[in-house]
Length: 161
Image (cartoon, rainbow, N blue to C red; front, side, top):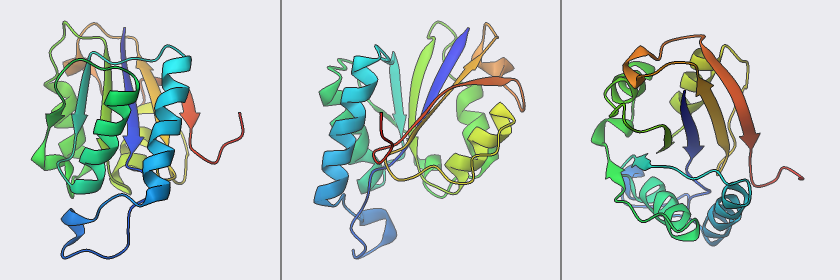
């Protein structure tokens, strides 16, 4: 069994020198902490965190890692910035199969699209800071493909628990 929690970066500032350099807003930083607490309270903890290196995603990943007491190293994947669904699938299919639970921190619209494809769901939009968890009945990440995932969780900062 393999599990991936797809996390959309938290709310970012609108203005920066480049899209890549957009920082988290104060609201976004707080939302990332809230989501980390929710994940930790549900005992959802990763063995690996993979993140886009863009400023807002990297900071979201770091805030979550700190607040869930993640002791590993965050793996930054350049291809997650402006990624296609095929880029996501390529990264997923190359994850070490000794691992079971992964967090992937990325960007919309592709983040929502890959979640819909893998879980055969209609989400519409994962809000900023949102988490969409999918479980796969496979032994290796290389076997993950469209429509075989089962939705475990869809949570986001403004959702009332």
